[in-house]
Length: 194
Image (cartoon, rainbow, N blue to C red):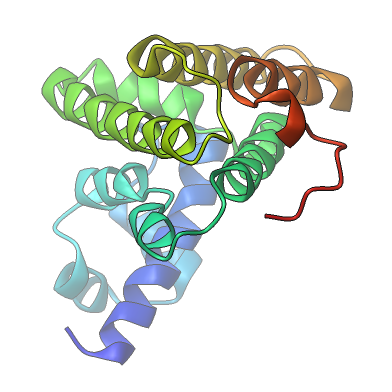
């Protein structure tokens, strides 16, 4: 795929994301996406077969950590970057895909979500194991903590659609994860820049 085509696909996903956040999954049509992106129907269909393909690709976008681990970046730094992104997502109720996700799941896409969840869990387990190896993280059960991280986050995202959270709620989430993972010498305010 060429660079121009990839930029167009990114634009489609970015604009469709907001439509899905505003309306849910079921209410968004390809016509809506055409209007939002300025693309013709033919131009849009050249990239995606339907709203389900766009939505599935949006949900499949992941935090990239494997290359950061290969470059031997600090596990704490990777963790802090991920927590910062998650805190922003928790607090941005206008961009929450919670409703759209539940609608999409109700259409028989359970296998898709099971695979998505498994990839996210493996990503967290990989980071946790790496942090344990570098001794930045405590010796914990990686699978247990990965589930805590994922399901605590998903609960906050879902509730952010119906309850306004203050900044402290997102910070509580991040601090809970730090307490579970970081060795005391790598705590949040220790000044270590590994």
